[in-house]
Length: 107
Image 1 (tube, rainbow, N blue to C red):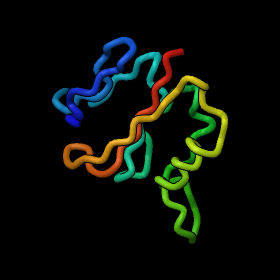
Image 2 (cartoon, rainbow, N blue to C red; image 1 turned 90 degrees about the horizontal axis):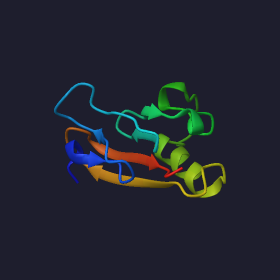
Image 3 (cartoon, helix red, strand yellow; image 1 turned 45 degrees about the vertical axis):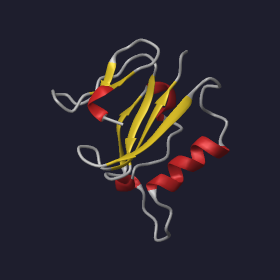
Image 4 (cartoon, rainbow, N blue to C red; image 1 turned 45 degrees about the horizontal axis):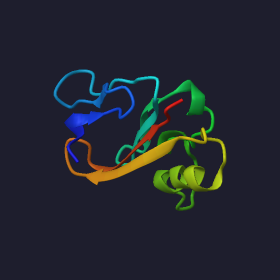
C-alpha cells in the first residue's frame, strides 16, 4: 500500500498524502487515523474521540497493554462504533512505519 495515495472510498478525498503539508486531510467519513509507531492518533473525529483508547503518552501502566492491544480490543469487544464502520489495518515501512489503522464510516 502506498500511503501517499490513500483516498476515502466514499467521497474520494485524499486522506493521506506524504508529499504535501499537512500529511492528512479529514473528510466526513474518516473516523480516526492511528499509528502504532508513535502510539497515538493523527486524527480523531468527534464521533469516536470519546470511545477510542488513550494514546501511549496518556497511558500509565506497568503491564504490557500496548497501544495496538487497546485499539484492537475496542474494535473487537465494544459495540460503540457506528454499525456500518470498518477499519483498515496496514503494515508498511517509511514514511509511516509500523502498523496504521484508518477507520471509516459511510454515515
